[in-house]
Length: 241
Length: 324
Image 1 (tube, each protein chain N blue to C red):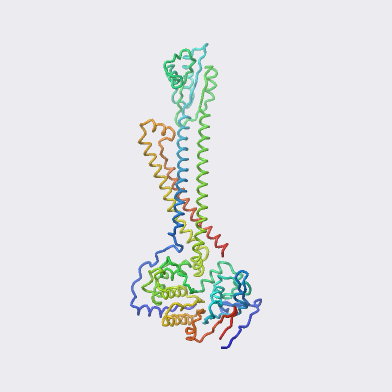
Image 2 (image 1 turned 135 degrees about the horizontal axis):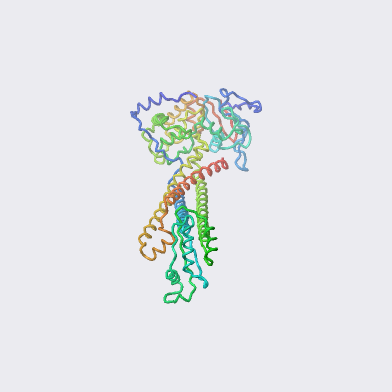
């Protein structure tokens, strides 16, 4: 498997048009927690619009940390991160919210709100954007039915199975039609047949213009698709094109 | 961004055989921040107690203000002329002259002289009965009633009395009115101060509760941020939650205070014919607060609920700014 380092940019000259800018660009990014060693170092890569990639590596390699960097819930200790052509170190909180609204995220532990029904959880991103329920009700129900949760929409997450929670989390990420989808082990709790179905959903979403990053260490899942792999190991990133 | 995979979704949904008309709303409009936690109930109880105390303070101050206004109005409508006995003068003639002068004064509705017997009877509570008052220089009193809404200047009458009735003094009770006014204003000031303290205590309780709620709902806040909620949206959600809690607590506290006031009013009315009731009524009037008193209690409840909501919102904004 060929390992390719993506060419580094000179960030002083780094300027993109909105239409051509990578969705995500990392340049010499490093992260450490507290005074410990760097858990991720010298990360330099881009995620292009309408691209599909797996993010893989052994457990504890830093896949989730990398996704959190993209989500801007962890700040890098060095380096440059830009999202949709904007340097995130210089953006305001409102701009940060605007960028997050262009992303959908599926957490490894789902992070559904236990006091909201499945329907309300999936509709949450739209509610957070201040939209009226009448404007999205049919769309949410349709998506819930598609992921097989049509008869679970009024249930609270604690009574859902692991696979159902997974699908609800995926539906919540997809409902805003994101430009970038980040999924952390999205098939970790489902059977192989449902995993294939979910993968087809991600592929379909990618065909419609969404850049997709799936963090997984499930080789059987990755082997179903010949796409770029971002491989994390020893805190560094290697890219298999 | 391109359209979502709608056609496929529709097809899949139809194939599930689940296509049916949707109800008007599928959302319960549930608060995004859990409401019925033990902390929330405790905060509602604290707000209820503080509102009860604030309402009692305000109601008490209003009661004193109303009673004081009634006392002052009664005292201010009455002026007394006192004529001390003088061996060289006929006190009865002096009384008649003073009554005549008083009746000529503007704003006077009635001037009534106390007879010798009536004046002596006034002293009985202090000196006892069976005493021969002929040996005592008992002064005579003339009570002057002032017309409603009239504010006469008694200086001309005072000068006329000095000139024509030596030994007569006119007391317009200004000193008592002033003292009553000062006392009532002090009590009202203390009441306002206590209400302010209670409101500050309520605000502090809300700040602590909000920070606790933020800490215990950290994961909810994180999820809201990740799905694109801004700080203002999150702060509004907390404000909504705490406003409801505050309104519930304040309604219970203010309701209890109003019920207590009504109950006390009922008790004093039932005791009205008894000596105890007379004493209570002499001190507090009928022990009922006016409509403005009820309005003040309701306003305090609303103010507490609003303070709860606004303080929680500001606390959340500050917490989010401090903690990203």
